[in-house]
Image (cartoon, rainbow, N blue to C red; front, side, top):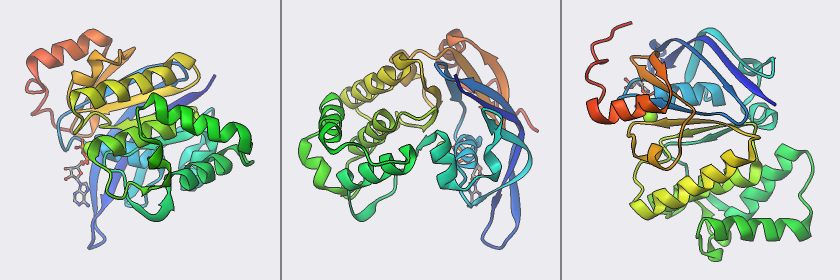
Length: 253
Ligand SMILES: Nc1ncnc2c1ncn2[C@@H]1O[C@H](COP(=O)(O)OP(=O)(O)O)[C@@H](O)[C@H]1O
Ligand SMILES: [Mg+2]
């Protein structure tokens, strides 16, 4: 059983001139393994900033508050220490890694996270199985990471990592954006498989409610202007679907 605890998190983005622009204005959130949380909010509200801050992106400066995973201070860890501690981020815009094949990338990541190389015999099967479940052509394993991948292929590749790496906590930043209806279903089924293991805490960040028709969150948090302004169960997502964010916008910190 794992717990990610975010307390009064305040974050600024570092601007090129060296100035700091405050984005997160005190975020409180607790996610336990087996739970699925949805963070929903309008564009520019700071959702990706929250995701990147937890993952350790250098563009963001933590100006207050704490993030712990099972009591360990995440904010003191390097990016790869965070990954080894069990944190996983599926990025809104996955990056290309020229010269590194999907197969190599996944094996290297698995080795780094587990502290030992996966057994050759079982690993090949696991990789093949993960690709099949996500309806990815086996030829993908030999392609360079994200190079020339379509939007949907990038997102499937993110979910393949999630299924193979089995993190304690996974943050999925707009995994639904840019997906057609079939890809959305395939990706959602992958997330639901991870969910059903009960071993991973999931934080789904989304602008739209449509992914929540496929993945039922246990908790919904409405995120506006750098903080959580309302919390509830799945019914809150339905209310947002009907009413949009309009009633929250204008909320100033
Ligand atoms: N490099 C940057 N320079 C200036 N503003 C930025 C930069 N990066 C992010 N921001 C601002 O931070 C705010 C939050 O962005 P983001 O976390 O991406 O929001 P969301 O993911 O909810 O759409 C936005 O107003 C965005 O313009
Ligand atoms: Mg975003």
